Structures are given as structure tokens and as C-alpha cells.
Amino acid sequence: MTTTSESVAARLAARPGVQRVPTAEAEVFQCRRFVDPALAAELIALIEANRRPSTIADDNGDAAFRTSETCDLDAALAPVQRVEALLGALSGLDPAHGEPLQGQRYAEGQEFKAHTDYFEPGGRDYERYCGRSGNRTWTFMIYLDDVPAGGATRFKLIGKTFQPEAGKLLCWNNRLADGSMNPATLHHGMKVRKGVKHVITKWYRERPWQG
Image (cartoon, rainbow, N blue to C red; front, side, top):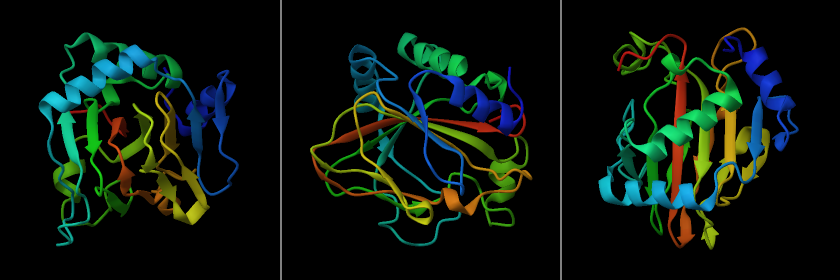
């Protein structure tokens, strides 16, 4: 198991098919065809069956800030276990540090405005979300379908935009080399203009996950 950001990044960079995004501002990687169409279809079905309105930490009062739907995925289900195994083999991260796998669904017009995945130290909800397991370290996100228009993930501060492609993995380190949070990981789940976007997200923490 890998335990440092450097070792995770090195492991990702050495994996055939994984591309390091050319920027010095953050460690960002992508890998096309990370999950096959059959597994993606199973995951989409789970999200469709169990979705609920998404929520945010440190609510800023903007009801349109995050308009997607979320699905908590049962770790006992075979498709979920297959994804967990794929991510574990790729990253080498200790599975004990991982949050439960989560799915998101974006219908036409839905988005998640620019945000970071880590919880802001000193923020109103910081102790609630980070008191036991620490902050988020790595994010792994998998697009499950092609989207006819819109739905890109835009990292404005590093000048990179990623289009949704069925089966593509996008992952990044939420921290800087000194362990502090990296504001350059600010990203925007842009509005879906046509079709529906489903994604799977896995977050890892500084300490073992305790819920």
C-alpha cells in the first residue's frame, strides 16, 4: 500500500494508459477506458435506482450551487466491489482510508459550481466532516457515459477542462507537497446541456475512514 502523495503519483505515472496532465499547479491524471461498458451500465442502474438530492458542506445559501443528485453505493454489491478493486490496484492507497463509493447524476441544466473536494480548514462544517478521519487527500472520479453536450469538469486555476467520456477516470491530489490543501484543485462540474451525466466518485482521507 502507498501512503504518501509522492508514491501515489509515481504509481499512477507508471501505469500504462494513465496520463499526467501537464501542469505544475496540481497532480492531475486521467485514464481512458478505465471501466468497461458493462460495468458502467450496472453502476448507472444503481445510481438511477437510489438517487437523492445532493448536499454541500459550508452551505453558502446559493440553492443553485449544486443541483445534481447523489447515490450512496452499497459496498456489498458486486459492481461496487469491482470498482473498489480497480481503484485499489491503480492507486495502492489503503482502502481503510477510503470513503464509501458515491455516484452522482446530472440531468440537463444541472451543475456543481466551482468548489474544492477538501473541506476548508476553519470552515463552519470542518470539524463535523474532518474531526475523526481528517481531510480528503485524493479524489478518483469516473465518467460512466458520453454526454452529447456540456457536463465538462473545468479546473479554472490550472486552465484545464475535461470532457465526459464513458469509462474515463480523472483523479487528482487535493494537497500540496507540504500536506496543506491545494486551492488549484478548484473545479466546476459544468452544466449538462444535452443528455444525462453519471459519475462515480471515490475520496480518500488522511486517516482511516470512521464515517
